[in-house]
Image 1: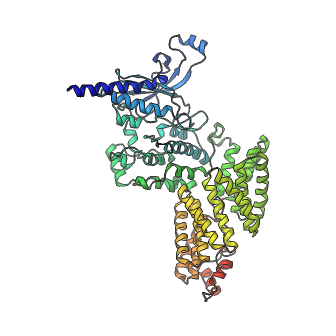
Image 2: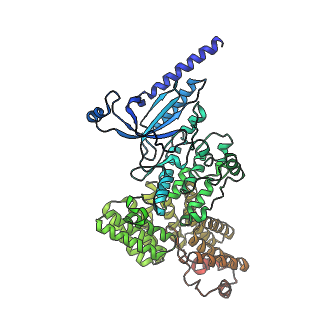
Image 3: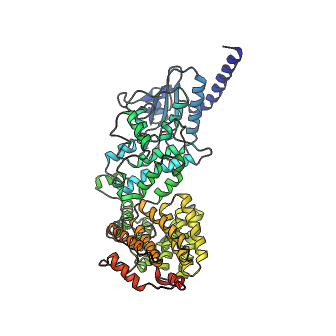
Length: 617
């Protein structure tokens, strides 16, 4: 070794030691850690996890330390082996970097707290300490407890919320090893991410996995194609892996036990061959989101923030012990089950659940719970097109929310009140409620709510003959929905754009917008939106004289109605085309009626379109 190389090596060693000193405040004396059961260990990548007690002092007997400083803390000890390496400075530098990043993430409750570490690099081991979570991994929790859809969605939301937090940091932070074993359920039934940074540490230093059943083999199925191809881990690869978490009862490629077969399947088809559409039939929006997360091109995947937008507005509630095996349902669960049934077009069950939730909240004198149920009842009533009743309920909800000073509740109640008033033909009275809701939602960064309001305001403007202003408002809604990942809002706004372009006689743009809305509604399983959009496209084809295309669209519309008799599964709801599709009408009879009523002249088309030609929103 030359003198220059020797000097550089000594400098690197000195620099690594200086950086390693930054971790001094997190170093834990080995004597403070007492492993409780040497035979018990929990699954975990990059090592094994043991339950231990962390005492406040390593110099006193455990009984005296407990008396002097209080009881020990129950902790999880991740025991990692370190392979023999030639470059110890690089190892220490990588270890320091990852542990410092982890220690700075304590501000987010969805990431396991870093309590400290014990390391003996010469002895070849490192221990990482975090709080012990009693409910195990998310997959273990789901398998051992019978949970309703809103409770499962709550755990899905917790993970994507934590992931979005990591990815929005500057610079973005990648978890690197998202899988069910690395998502734990805490004592409050919240999902938290653990094993933060260990994947990069494994790749960038001398760490190696233990030869256990939870070694690298257990992570291959969760890996995106680019990771298996040697590309560095990035936020997009986290999103790919996160999509598997939604399939909480199924591990990736669990029917395949040979690693190279799994790798071959991933490269042959980045979209896993799983029956997610039937498994997630209660929330097909989630299935559509998963398929986009599994895009083979990382640049085409939604961001974690977009994924969070989709999950945020799905019916969800934190699991509670009493809900196991459906023996007792909390008011919160009943409320969200009612919301879910409303989304699926089952108003009878929806109102049954919502009424039960209201009764429980009233017994508990929970005023916020009562206000929340009122808002969901208003939404459910809007979806049944009973706008007189919806206005009454929304008015009551708004009064409750103003009393509680619940700003976001005021925004939601104002929206449904404005929606109902608009559908009753009182456009001038609807606008102030919609604008109030829009202002609040913009202030709070509620992109989905803002899209809802912009779409309705655009409809008001179109009804008042202000088509150009309406188009500008609706274009803003489309842009915001696209940017935030709100697919449902995007479909809704595009439908309104198609309507407005039709009124402006720009039939090519109208058809383009309606066609995109149909595609989105079909992909996310939104039968109600699909039914109404097919109806609108069929109407447009009728006015253009393309009767064959119109008939096919109307046939598809009837098939969609079979899947969802109400045709109203949106957050805000679309009004069905009343009296146009009676149960005894076939598409052919309907088309014949249309032809009889069709006007031949084009000069008065715009006026007819504005008034009566297309089904109202």
